[in-house]
Amino acid sequence: MAKQRILYFDNIKIFLAILVILIHLGNIYGGVGGWYYTEAGRPDSFNSAFFILFFILNKSYGLGLFYMMSGLFTSISLQRKKTGRFLKDRLLRLGVPLLFFTLVLAPLTKSLKSYFVYHKSIDFLAVFKNNIVYFNGDVIGPLWFLELLLIFTLLLIGWHTLFPNTSPISSNGRRYKDFPKTKKIIVFIASLILVTFIVRIWFPFGQVYKPLALELADTPQYIAFFIIGLYLPRTDWLTSIDKRTANKWLIFIATLFALAILIYLAASHFLRFDIKQFIGGFNLFSALFTGWEMTYSVGMNIFILYFFRTYLNKQGRLSSFMSKNVYAAFVFHPLVITLLALLLKDIHLYPMVKYLLVAPIAVFASFGFGHLVRIIPGMNKIL
Image (cartoon, rainbow, N blue to C red; front, side, top):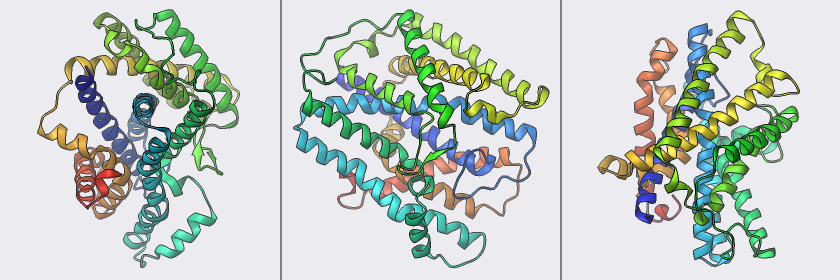
């Protein structure tokens, strides 16, 4: 069973890493969200709809699933290792890439735009100093995921050290066999909707909490899924999701998928609502979007776990290669895709068409560069 879990979980990690790369490439060509370099020209409705819907439909579930898997592997690792050794490993695997990105990769990636667009020399030191003085989301970039995961890990270690009997990874804890019934899942979703809606009143999408350079809009989802992951070793949930349950949620999320498209079209084109009302604040639109997003996230994650366990619980040469380099691809992809876009900036195509042509190159370039980094002696222990 352990071997099967590793294979399909590794394949999920590959899938989610590719999704992250494609979303960030969409930031470049679609102008959705911020990025180190953007190429989006004057927006038109079709192009905007494609990138906004791609962003919403995939960001809604992907990172929550990432945190659930992180919680699972954190729980297993902490049970097998002494706390000191576990902490050392986590600081090496999470802290070092985070520090390297903040001090080296982020300033370098930001400097590329000056060189390729404005034909100025790369002033790495100036960008570095600016990052330190004006500490914001650009400093950490997509690696905020590692920062938040490191915070979760440190809090878990503190909990496990001070209150070992109540810790999620306690060996004396209760076991849960069968996958939760629909009623319990609905209660979980409702709780998640309520907490997330409240958080978004003060921290809507795009607002960065500067002391940590983190967006807090989705943290309730990440915390919830991380805690679920911590408890997974005590359960048979991963193997007890049956075809009937998966298909039920597939039908439901397909309905939500269609509903998202209809709502977007109605809000932006026919009813002329301000889309910004959906991203936070105390209003009906924010409540509706939060409800849709949390429900879609839970449903997608249930289906993905079943689908990969049932149909993608194996690896060939390519997936094995990508599995080994998935973490390095995640860490270095901001530099890779930004450089790639800048090298191709003089090729003028419709943004969506250019995005679809560049996307496979960006994915393989990120994984290929990650592989080159990992063959440096000692790097495979970190990445």
